[in-house]
Image 1: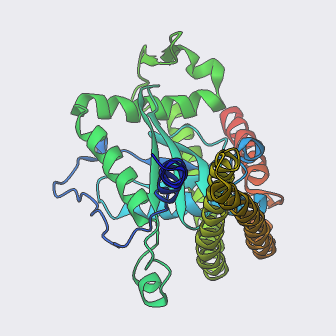
Image 2 (image 1 turned 180 degrees about the horizontal axis):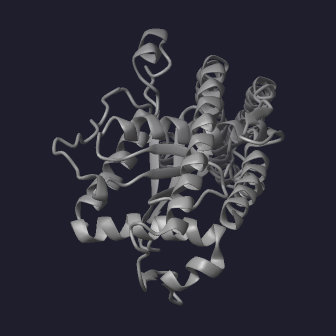
Length: 392
């Protein structure tokens, strides 16, 4: 084999392997349809769903690879935005009772959905979702991922659908499919335990004997209160007030999502294009550097050859390879500019909850602070109301 052929045989395989590593763009906007419940479900089997604010995953951001795109401010905003879109999607299935976005302390609900944001950069959305019911039964934990179409941020397409609607549709369908596996008796039990857990949280002494919990976290009903039990009737009145307050929070989440939508969609559109541009630059930089390295290796091999012509060719290859590597590092610097451009886009999304003034029969109360703070204050007030009613 000639020296030239040997040089080519060394360099070309490396070059082709590297150039084969290309990113792909999704070119379809097809959406998975939501499964629609066509049968009428009895009230005793109609489960309410609570969706807690998602974990933004801030503590894990530092563990991500260098290519990851993230902004803490936007992650916090998304932690409220995504649950609200999921709530709206679940409502379209007509398979459930009330569906609410709930504060972290609100766990006395028939079915509880919790989630964490693993990745969100405009191009890719990855959520970790866990669903469980009031009995302690774990329905499932699953990671959902969707890559936005290249057409998703076209102005006309954005008016028609959410870029990651497939994620919410898949979650909705999976929850529905699991629910359909449950027998009517199991559905009724979920509702009963949910009510008893709420009662126990307000009056542990009165209702602790009605439920027992095993080491795995599953609840069993020991006995049910009489249907006309006056204590249970008070608990139900308190629970209705609790629902009314949580319903007012839905208005807040709705206004927040509506106000966030335009700037957030603009950010995601810009982020999508920046991510694609950055990854293209990084891919080109990586390929340039490795092609340059292949040229240097081949050049060193040729430079050690006895043929003067081959040594000259080798020297040229080494010099050319070094230039290509430098060009690759220059492209790395250019990709850093894209990252900085993204950072400039992500510093204006914050949630401020307005003060709530609530008129009660005997007083006016004011709730302030975050959603969780206000809900904690509200629960304390409800407990006071319950105690007052019990002593009357």
